[in-house]
Image 1: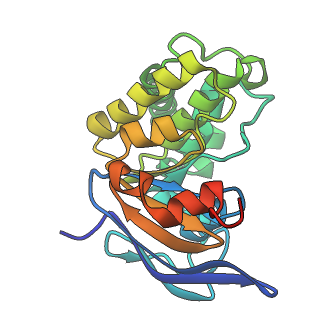
Image 2 (image 1 turned 180 degrees about the vertical axis):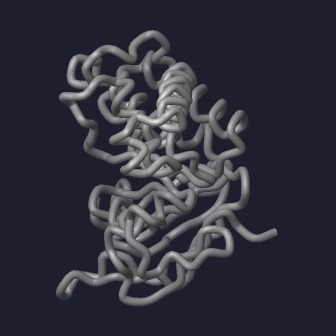
Length: 257
């Protein structure tokens, strides 16, 4: 079966620094994979490569059968690859509902003329968009919170709102960049359940970057470990936890200690 997201030989340099080197990934349809590594390992850079923010110096990236190399981030998002960000990037002055509705414009059918004239077709689409946005908020546990300004939501709820906005793009593949960052232990427990539920309910393929090893080891079926831009291990949670290269990347070598 064609992977939902495929990367081979993906590399990028910034000056003399090899930020990512020969990265490979085959995320299966419905897969829930993890990407971990120490700070500065190249994880967020890789997400920027997959989503078109950066163009790789070499390599191949495909979403299903679609070649993503050279596509604009907006085109990649509209084609079915959505993401959240390590540092929250909400429209803080907008309501939670409007943050989600912004993403839905990628799939709007009515054009400028219909919008200016407020035609019946435009009104129907507006109503459908509002209902869909409310449904996405409910899906991430923010039911009834649509009128609140994004900046007034607790930090954990802002993380959930980012996920709702990404889901509004109707993705095939969802990239989550440290969704548990800043959450308290109770919020992290809820996030574990949410990630599994979203994958199963919406038939998503998910690639997760996360520093919370408990969360990663609990929810991810397969884990790739990066260090200094290079893959140093792959496998199940049990396999990567005892891999000598992974232990050294996180804790240092016995000699150095």
